[in-house]
Length: 80
Image 1 (cartoon, rainbow, N blue to C red):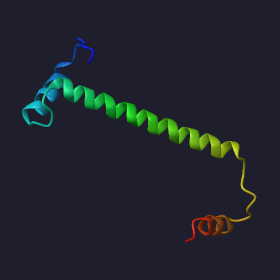
Image 2 (image 1 turned 120 degrees about the vertical axis):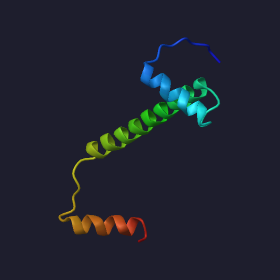
Image 3 (image 1 turned 90 degrees about the horizontal axis):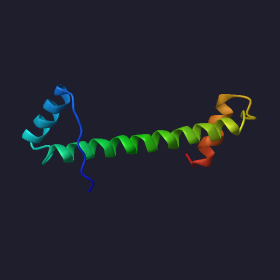
Image 4 (image 1 turned 180 degrees about the vertical axis):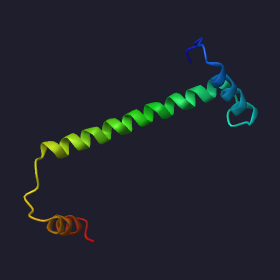
């Protein structure tokens, strides 16, 4: 692992110390790595959702006349 030196606000440092004291993490480094990993995963998820939305927008409007017809087609595709 790469060793880094970072400066934390007093509030964040207290929070990290508290997490270690409560044995949520074995060290402040472990807590920081966990938080960064979660942020990366959240970013990847949001990018995936953005891609899906963009694909939906590019596909254009539905040819269905009513929301009921569209819902019926979706249900039939899902075998509901």
